Length: 140
Figure 1: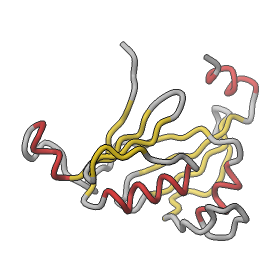
Figure 2: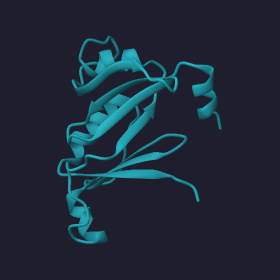
Figure 3: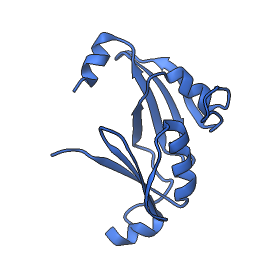
């Protein structure tokens, strides 16, 4: 088995794609107006319209209703991402203005993390290892 992607169902694909493009610096590849993917070397974040749910099973997924999954992105600098997402950073993508759940903090397992909610309310963790042990866990 090879884990390759996670898909978020949303009522506004363009809004969610814009958030993730600006937050991650990745550019989406659009298949249709109802489906786009942000790809990295390790995995893909797929963003799909509520209209696509019926293709699987009508009513099986509900947009903006997640309260149990945290999507995580490995970043170089958690504090810079925090600044950019709050509109105080200096990068070209500064100014996304996210709903910060927990500001940058170093976790007991050695990652520095920033927890936010995307425009649909989904939890997103931007993290970077700050100890040798944490970095070793991420080595592939």
